[in-house]
Length: 273
Length: 116
Image 1 (cartoon, rainbow over the protein chains, first blue to last red):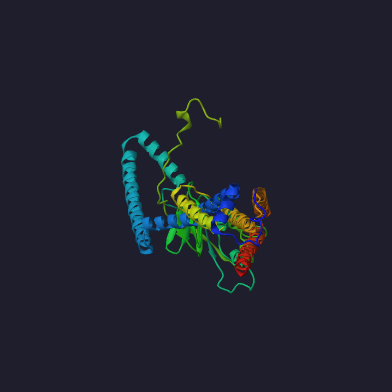
Image 2 (cartoon, each protein chain N blue to C red):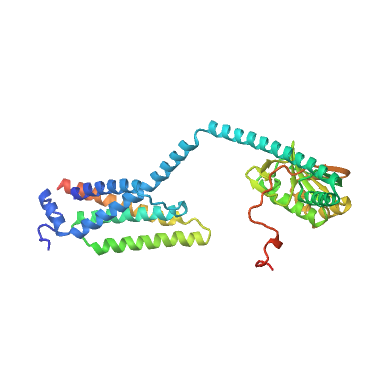
């Protein structure tokens, strides 16, 4: 218990008395010290984040190093693409020699050509349409959001989807000097200010080249309630040009399969059966 | 009183050093909760010191205050998150005011004691 004399503010007391008083209430001191310890622990959290950031920046190096890394990797990617195209050319010459040999060989070659045509690894040509999409140069009205006035990856996805549904047989998207064939594994994704198509950054204006019935393809895009109508509302200009001969390059990326196998190799069937 | 204050600072430093050495990782999404916890702990600590200074110590009052502040602070932030509102400041400002009040009381008591 605390004496009446000690329990008043009127008595200033000495340091010894203060310490004595504390010894009489160890629970308060313990609580205060636990709280202080927890405060110390929590205070260390932001510093740990800073430390992690410093470590990462040390590993990654300076901005210039990063730029150099990107340049080196894109150069390597281009070299690999060239090597892949050369391999495909070699494969083409092997096909030719196979087709000349036997009857079965010719049949096999025909099936291989059909498969590669559908896979998009062969350059194709035919009649179709070229849809050009361009963002407006005009100023956006004050107070309005800029986002609807830009071409987004969803717009490209919607358009290509409509074109497939309208019977397009092959498609490619061109942006400036880059052209990317749309194949079964093509991903069209937003990557900040650009759109990544087959992991290739692309920016407006876009040209979508589609091989198929030109009239049918045009009708699928234009008109009330069609996919281009909301774009026109947000001043995204478009033009559709019908052409008798459009040539699309082959898909230049790698197609790798890790998990799929022909179903006949799996006699037990699967969950989808 | 000074003795407890110095001890608290030393223990805070030990906690800080241990915190940097330990590999406790809290996702950044919980940082608004952590900041309210920090404010609640600081407020309860200052309240404890205030009680010691007044020589009216009550451990249960400190614990109850801490639990109450943690509960309401975290509830407000959680409720705001669910409703898509950033109610972090609603929880942080009263705690900040309370801390300032406790500091003020501690300083004032110290001054009045010196005059005597």
